[in-house]
Image (tube, rainbow, N blue to C red; front, side):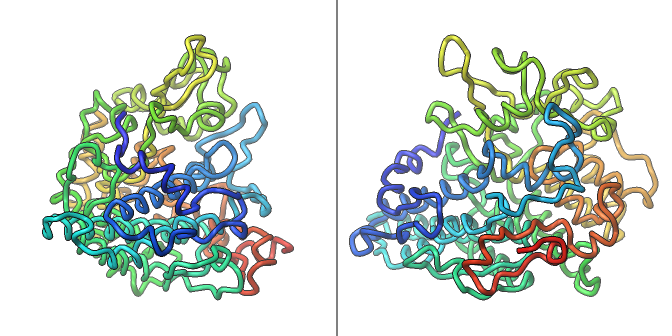
Amino acid sequence: MKTIKYLYKTLIITLALLALQGCSKLLDQKPYDYPTINTFWQTGKDAQTGLAGCYVELRAQLLNGDGGLAYFTYGDFPTQVFGSGEWGQFPFQGHFEYYTGDVLSDYSGWYKTINAANTLIEKVPGIPLNKFNADIKLATNEQNKIMGEAYFIRAYTYFYMARIWGTFPLMLKSISSASEAVNDVPYSTNAQILDQCLSDLTEAAKRLQWGYISSTEQAVRANKGSVYALIAHINMWRARPNQPASGAPAFIAKAEAACDSVINKGGYQLVDSTAYASIFKGKSSEGIFEIEFSTANNEYFGIGGFTTLFLAKPIIANGRDYPIFNFSSDFLGLFNDPKDVRNSAFFYNLGGNNTMCSKYSSITYPTADKLTWRTDDNLIIFRLADIMLLRAEALTRLNRYTDARIWLNEVRNRAGIGDYSGTDANLANEVYIQMQKELFLEGHNLYDMVRTGKYATNPYYSAQRYNDEGYYWPVNVNLFLRNKYTQQTPYWSSRIQN
């Protein structure tokens, strides 16, 4: 798999100059532009290096936590995808009382990504255009592209945090000391945070184009398709049933329009059902935004995390005999149609004693003895099937059932199971089922459950917990010592002693 060659070649420079890595504690971080504030932000190459750091920090946060599994822990594990395993009942089932001292309940690390984006947004406009390119038109396009990507990354990061904690400090300026992000800074409301995300995406859309400059950037660099996919998700999140109903129709209409833009202007195509694996290998015709990994560049998210917990022999040549965690029978029960191509495309030995997900099974071995291994797949954030199903969900909520069936059926037919023949009354449920089947272990399932209201009827949860927004994670207890404005998420406020 090719990487974003220019960006990642500059990774070491980025880390040294911008101090994006170092001590694990946010309080110990050097200022972002230390020590070259007067000498670094001078050229287009400097701006590209800063953007590389932005992407690197985003990837680092998505892979935070034990085994680098943050993305799956937040988006998939609380949805009963997995059941019992070697460690007993899988610890992220719906009734689990999240450990509030864990790194995954601490949002402070995300401000490294935000500060990287803030610095780009502030510094890049001050770089003379002739320092990007002698051709002013090309220079303007490059400057705009860097700015657009920075706005997108900031919006995505804040939205990602908003779905996990709801509220937190909103920082829109670069800071000389990263600790300012959490030390005695007032909280913004969830509405303010999401409004800012949409404002950032408006700025990003002005600066980015459809398509890509080269194939090396496909899906792994944000473009206008990424922007509109995120706009769609934000608006549908705002319209979830446990929020005031008065604003929902407008949010849903905006989401549907954004989905339309992605589908009709983005140039994306569903991959053939015989090529599902290409989606996860990366840069497929279906990919809209994804995080790139290349084992050739020592980039991977497998060893110690995904592959150790969820894969085994024969996918891993010298791995365990069985995976540590097993899929729940309830989840596997969704894949009961023998015509569904996803049965074999997404699983190894479906229904057997060793059922494993094969989405992330492009394994490489750095040594001849194959005693260690790496996962050479990309982390998928948005893809076309996701947007088609999101559009079907939006259209169903707008009572446009005939139109909703079009996009639902696109996904069903690619999977080989034909058009939906059920009633309009059950259409929303069918859309949700296809989301579960199509997008599991892609960081979506919990948010789909919350957004559609299915969380309230899930046997591990309750309508009361849904109304109390109990899907939010608790806030790490250490943050209360560093910020007098820290607020515990509502559901957990009466259940945790800070």
